[in-house]
Image (cartoon, rainbow, N blue to C red; front, side, top):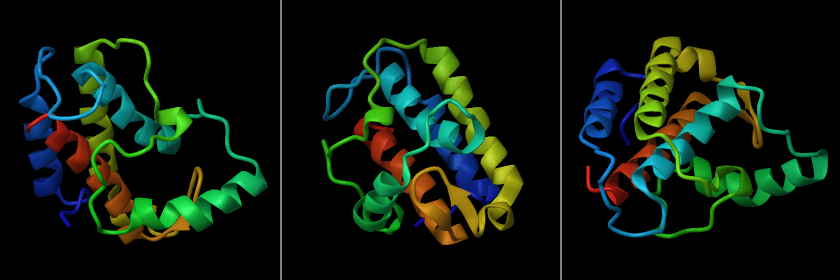
Length: 150
């Protein structure tokens, strides 16, 4: 799996994002391209923003036991999989704003580097090591950029 913490792999993701246009259609799924960008931003909002409520202890335990293994492993996500409620984007979003936010988050993450994330507490899964953080960030972007053909 590629590494979002390296300059080259982060740049490659940004190049792919810059190939998107407001009229880009998905190869599967229901989201528009602007909704997909907003959806991808949620991953970073959970890290950098305080806008999503934290799960209670019981829900966090369930997430750690049943969801975390799928999210942080190195196996690609399946097409049209189930999405957590915080990640569901129903409203249409501003393409350029969401694209710029995502690019800024990717750059910030790369600049902070893997050492910053190694052992960092995640919003829903407890402490993750640098590989788990990378897998979570990268494979989610890979899944959705592939969904939109870039």
